[in-house]
Each structure stands twice: as structure tokens, then as C-alpha cells.
Image (cartoon, rainbow, N blue to C red; front, side, top):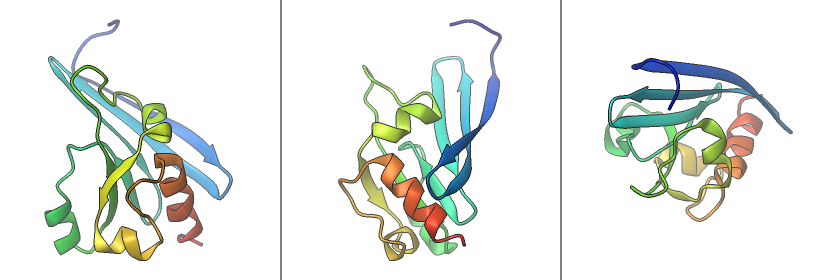
Length: 111
């Protein structure tokens, strides 16, 4: 890995339904990533859905593995959604869809 730690990288990401912000956060022996839209986040399994749901947040998560962690926002695009808050489900997000599909639904819900 190049670069010093800890580090955060943000990038603009264009989708059919609009633009989102991708983020990657890395520190020694750890990382997480997310794609943030106006109405919610598609992220890795580090997010706690119970707390997010209590605060009315639309969060959908995908889960990597120790051998194939989700490190960059691009990793989330093909990753499978494994859970979501009720607010995200109300946008049409469902377990089993891709992260990209979930982002598109969030972007469609932000207009």
C-alpha cells in the first residue's frame, strides 16, 4: 500500500440518476468505504443499521470478507446488499441487489 496512514480519499461518482460522493478511509489494519447521496449511504458492513434506523437514516450495507474486503467506493458497485434500514427499504432497496442499484435508487429518491 502506498501513502501514509491514516488517510481518507473522496471522489465524485457519476451515475444514471445523478452524482454521489465516494469515500475510502484507511488506517493500520483497517478500512471502510461508502458512497454518499443526498438521501443516504451505501456502505460496507462497518455501519450499524440499528442506530442509523433510529435516527431515520437511509443506509444500505454490503459486506466484504477478510480475504476480499470492501476498500474503495468502486468495490461497493458490484457488492451485494446484505441489509438496509427501513428508510432505505422504503426507497426500494432490497437485500440481494447490487450496491450500484442501491445508489441509483437513492439518487432517484433525492429529486
